Image (cartoon, rainbow, N blue to C red; front, side, top):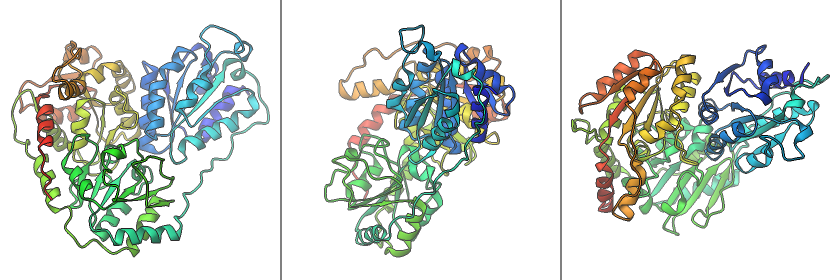
Length: 544
């Protein structure tokens, strides 16, 4: 058989159900081999969209999402999505065609050193140099991508290797190690520190989601009566409605939840990575002790010096510590929780127009089921969504906050719908982020993935304006024009709605769910609330 056919058999062996990408001359043999496979190829309209789809698919399933491009510009178009997946710890295997090995030693048309190009933004980057090594390269790529901490593997596949005949090569057995049990002495050290704490607080990170340890985290918090804050990327690991939930931490201005960290004498970091929220922003008291619970050792950072590191399976660590530690007897989070809940619901009856961010989020949340999935793009709306969307379950509000790349929401929503067709998938995006990958509407229509695209429209780079106004008191080069989003949707065969009053959004979202197709909702947003929030938080007196 051809090497390309062996390659596809290796992907099948890994349990791959879908590949996102664009065909090209240098991956012709791979594309032809796919015709005899059960793997579904999702033809996208841009390689960046393909990489983002693989990124979100990997986050939601725990299995590596796969994206494919040709050489040169096709491969470089993957880079932003690959970097996002790698820094946000989403398992992805990216594959690019490459020129024949007979011309890689010299200057040649569309040839780049792809292995070197992808090496800084991946966990593993390799080229298939001989047909016989395909099973090893593929198996290692998936094993590395899916191992904790997950990330991206990259495979360069030269066209002449792909068309060669190969004999006596078969896919390798799929194996993955189980996370180790945390050492008993580290458990005991953590128990002592937590039992002696006067003001303990939990910082839950995305590792809790990846480890599927949400239930153990909730049980830990309940047994020890310790409040929990989550990073943007861990929303829902403890239900917002839970009495011990303090919502999300990550807004760089001082927020209500920051009050808890300011007072804490012990912060229990569970599944937390410093790319999610820089420790210098929340760990300002050098006397405050850090307990690090994670499969991996703590990153070296002068603001993240741990008192004890409990490495191993997160769920096991939480259960064992909770079984030994004394429960917290104070009332650390009561008034703080009340302040957070009060603000969350303050705008639910607001009918102003343009619509306030708080009201958009309230109406969106009320229209969705707890299991539905929201993919949030990057921009001013991300700060509001991260702060105020009331997630009840993990992986129901996906926010990129490691690499934090604009353009992820629309392709990400397509991937979410493919991974979970029974759930409503919503892309929450600004008008700037939407237009970065709006071409993937055609992909969604063609493959039949009904999604809702909720555009917060302000004709500006809103987050940058927010920063500019805070720092300089004036904006600089942030304005642009938009198309008619309703007509834009209709040009693809999708549906479009424009919100023209404050009371229209809630029923429009509900109608969009019933429409069961690709729907764009153009909602003008009142971003004057940004500076009001900054002023409010600047005057914040901690309610503890």
